[in-house]
Amino acid sequence: MSNGLLQRIGSRIRAELWDAPADQFPGLNGLRGLASYMVTLYHVGMFGGGLPILTSVTLELSTTQRLINGFWIGLDVFFVLSGFLIARILMTSHKRTGTLEFRTFFTRRSFRVFPAYYLVLTFGVFYFTRLPGNITWLLLQGADWSQIRDSAWQNYTYTVNYFFAAGDINAMSWAWSLCIEEQFYLALPLILIFTFRVRAPAFRVGVLISGILIPPLLRAIQYSLEPNVSLLDGMYYRTHNRADEIFYGVLVAYFFVFHHDAFKARVERLGNWTWILGILCIMIVWIFGGLQARGPFAIIAQFSLTAIGSALLITNCLFLQNRFTRVMAHRSWFPAARVSYGNYLIHPYVLIWLLTYLGASSIESFQGLQIVGLLVGVIVISNSLAALMYLIFESRLIEAGRQLGKRWRQPTLSLGLRTSPSQVSEMDSRTR
Image 1 (cartoon, rainbow, N blue to C red):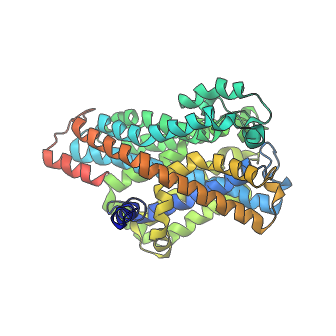
Image 2: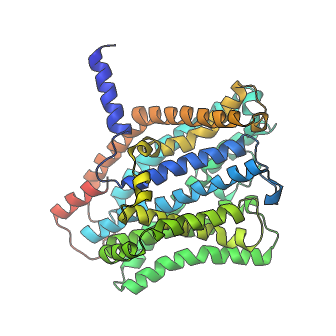
Image 3: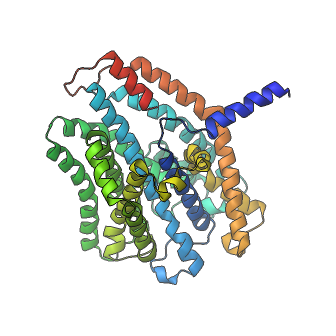
């Protein structure tokens, strides 16, 4: 292999996986990278057999299990982040062009999300779950592959979150969170059309706040009807029970786009308390909540409190150059942030393969530093495979979607404002 080719490969890796685009928020890359590591650690415990998925009493968990159990919060950070980033794109489009540019938005999102998802899903359904039983026992639990085949339509249609409960047999059960996001983003443009047809800021904020309040109200109703309800029996995975977390991100995006200066001034007055209160909210949930917990706090309040904490951390990284933002903005977070989507798709398969390779029946076979070694192995292998998939497969499709979106950029879903060509061009350069 010539030096020139090696240099080109190295330059591409650096450009794609190390140098963050100038139009991104560095602190948010740090939050995304941290959330990716948190989710991986939680899944190492859950899929590795180290967490009792169906237990209902948090106190029955060991100290190590309680620590690992709290990392589920990383997924909720993703929900709030996604709500902010996607809503900001749509709202910036509306502010600058008078339209939501629906076709451009969904073209880009489709090329970004669907190819990698369906590639990994098809690999899981038709290859990985058909490997020898000692490799796939954590997914199949002794069941026949036909159960994987018969439930695969739920994954292919992004509806598994309305059919799945903890312990069910599924080739990619962890995709329930991706289903929530896709279902929400199908609805979000329609919600914004309704919201922006009225110019009164109070009405717009009221619509978004209602999106924050309705899901916990639904959770409260479910709890009142069934006080012994368990989160993992199904309600944890349903979009109508979890959409408030994404709406917190949408609300932050609204104030960031339409009331930027006033929003910034309020955050600056709050100062370091922004991130301190955010961490405090998350730690309260970590200590007193949990997916195995029951009661009004666990069922009704903990998801909202986690979302509030996440929204505060996002807001801190947007406006304040304090210690927390500097840590989150360090460039070492960017590679994990860049491949976080691919890592989320892949890492449970890597964990299952690695446990089999090491001859372990579950994570409980490991002690102390061995668990740390297993986690590091899963992170390194998963992120490496995700990086390879991004370089070879995803990045080219993302660019294709971007170019196709440019061709289709026309005033669609108009909200009554006129658009100049210069505004359209500026919009494109800031939302890639």
